[in-house]
Length: 522
Ligand SMILES: [Zn+2]
Image 1 (spheres, rainbow, N blue to C red):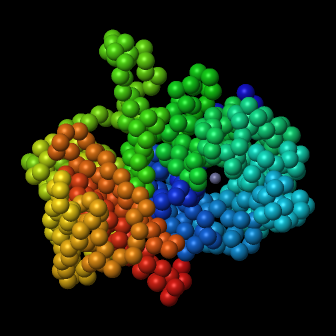
Image 2: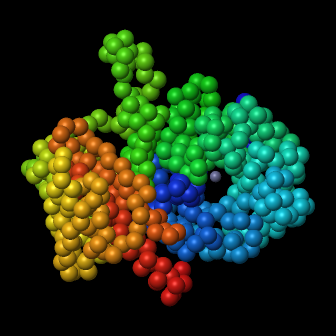
Image 3: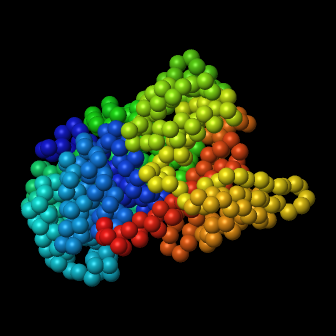
């Protein structure tokens, strides 16, 4: 394997769940949700957190700024185009970080330079150097990306990267922006760059892959085998289009095949599963059941011959253990008689920071659930916390569900009566629909005056049994605003109503925030 100075045996993990991951359709998160994820990423042990693209919106600026203040161990950086305005915003956003950084990018492929940038090769080269030199006056840690590197001319890449290293970039990133690369050619490209770029042995090489052909993880591993010592990834592989490199898959590949790679990461693998679940809860993007590492079936052995083997000796069919990624099993943790202290302790073990959440609300909700459901599992507790607490911390919800009555039979028209508290006032309305969920949503829309259109709706059972909590995720849209909502309840229709109301509350929060920004600036 090719190695270079300053790279050695450690592969740095750069997480971009909060930037590239958030570009997944329907994954938008509010600032408080991003902070919760950033804290968990710190616990997971990632080396770098890309908090956002500060110049892209006021919301992104605020996210990066708050993550920079609250996260201590990892480098926190903001993405920026190779333009002074972007760089100024990014520098300002990471100003309070313990380890601040900036990630400057410019496209280097002929197709991007010609049609998107309308710049010549030498103009692109000059812009990259000017941007890095400018940022270098204000901070130490600069990563430079040649966007669409996998479709760029190799000689031109060598020139641009050499100039970037000379100007002060510490990490040089090779993105497969369009998910076009194949492991053998991507590995060869990385090796070529490491060996031929002047100053290339004194920087860290990084890979940023997209999953359009399902090869993001394979391409990232090929890059590592050829000298890259940083991988950019997202939790659950979420991201633009088909997504990014999945953090859990890359890390567990390097860990499971240490015999082959001989490399380490700083990831606390036992935090992988809680992190993946948290991100899924917050974004409303479910983890596919056959997803490697963290899918529901990842450790389920169905074939008789496999089951027999695993019972005799786990390693016959298991290359890693569920415990190594933090799956503790559906452990029965609590019931009706569990006290506040036990509940608080369990929350801590599950990774929720008690100082930051409203313990009283979560505990009340837990007690309510324990009245309806005998056995409370870790997954139930996580859902209670996510549903009750992560939504709109520090700000009361505008809408609250008070009462719901639905009528449905194999004949007759489904109908729903809903009572909400809106700004403290109780209001009731009634509607019919194609089904009871539809009737319910129409009644809520009548009360709130919502013009949102339902784009996506999904239900899943969180734990087994007919008394399981159902979790509903929905995505609603009005003009250019898309908001996701989640709701959990032992009754699916109530969970559906809660999810819709949750989304409406988030939309209110966003509207309110936008108004504030318009008045006061970010
Ligand atoms: Zn990307």
